[in-house]
Image (cartoon, rainbow, N blue to C red):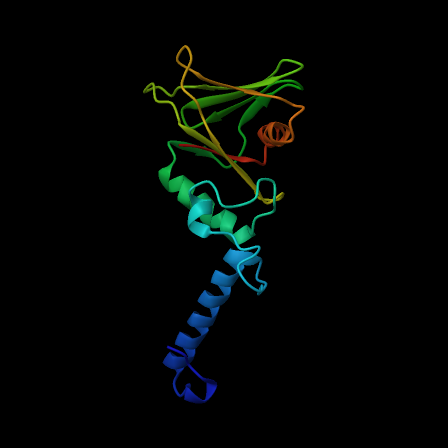
Length: 178
């Protein structure tokens, strides 16, 4: 229903028009930085992004979409950490996320991510990293456990792996395990 200015005759109609305007603007901002674009180029498929895809890897994501993804991830995660409660050295980083322990180990030519199970013996299947200031979100599927823990190797010479290492080292990175 479209409401024209000359049709607003009561405070209720004004409130309804304002709500629709705010909703329309928020939808536009979630889909593309608040800018109208010709065609679908540059738009992010919200459903695909929430499912872990749909955005170019390393490309900035609209801040409103990151907030929506954060809420979605919190609802389906086994554990999440929005603040680092970390013990780290120059080389190694360890974070406790819910009942899980995530460690980033520097072996010189390679890094390893090691995730220990919680007290119930559960292990996550996905690792999601969100850095709001850099407007980055990475969704990393985790493999099968080896010896009761999840292990993943990262190559610092690879751009994608280097970005993952930087995010894991940064205490401002939010970590979601699901």
